Amino acid sequence: MKVRIFVGLFLSLLFIYLSFWKPQIAGLFSGLSVIEAFFGKTRIDVNELALVLSEAHYQYLLVGIGLLMLSLFPRAERWRVLLRPVHSGIRYWPVYSAMNIGYMINNILPLRAGEILRAYFLGKSENISKSSVLATIVVERVFDLMAAMIVMSITLFFFPFPDWIRNGLFYIGGGLLALILFLVGLLVNTEWTLNFLRKVLKPIPAKLSEKIVKIVGSFASGLEVLRSSKAYWKIFGYTLILQVSYVGSVYATLLAFDLVDPAYPAIQENPLLASLVLLIIITVGVGIPSAPGAVGTFHGIVAFGVGLFGVPLEKAMGMAIALHLANYIPLTALGLVCFWSQQFSFSEIKSQFPKGGQKG
Image (cartoon, rainbow, N blue to C red; front, side, top):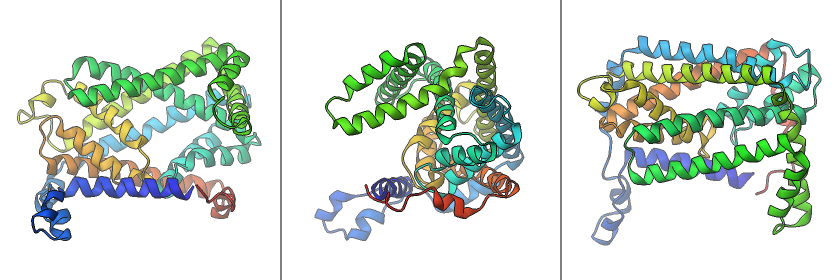
């Protein structure tokens, strides 16, 4: 665990560093000091960045925040649909609360611990097994991945990414497709798929292999909801609403920083495509191991993505900072409200981290 936390913190700091400074390592051999080599050349004019942030049209950013907050309602309802085979009488408020508590914990603790802990808190409030709830979270993420693959396919077809990004997205898409097919296999023929997984895991120790197979097998229960076509279309509908909300939020942020403008023809000519491209880049950025709240990695990836449209780095970073705060502050605050309203305690969070699990 300590290693994963260290990797996340390191990557966050690395992204922050590379976003603001340009290393001159070769200069170490030509007389530059270590400080000059690593911090002597900046990428961003801090005064210009401050000006960008001060001149932004924050009323548009508020619209984006509003869309994000509204998207939480269909997201919670989608999760509730997934939970019905586990608990037919599952109530909306505990589901909504647990989901937002998870987001809050992701923003303040490392390793995306909120994904595990929201299963604990919902299980406690509704008396459901944590493993069953975790299975539905996996299925929820599958639908998010499917939506991401569709958006990614659209952007790859219409947007001229540099070859190395295009190739990287193809690899990511291939990996997502393989994962989705595997989960479909669990739904269609659980036993055959688990036996296939055993064969794939043969090179690793048998004890570890069987543990993985057992965990994956327990997740198969979360796929049961997909056997109902009615539930499937509900889930599809809610997923579509979510994607529309996210694209709208990104578009509002583009307006907030005057990026839908003749100065940036790649955005002005097709702001919808630009929003889709940035949505995919944000999705990738959030998935990179990082410090809590994706600090640093989010900023670096989003600023880079906005830069693909010919936007100066100061303006791109200004948008990244504003977009991150627009996500971080409301979600953390709402999560805390839900946490306290359910009368949970922070000692319960601590209790879910085993004392012996601090290694590796």
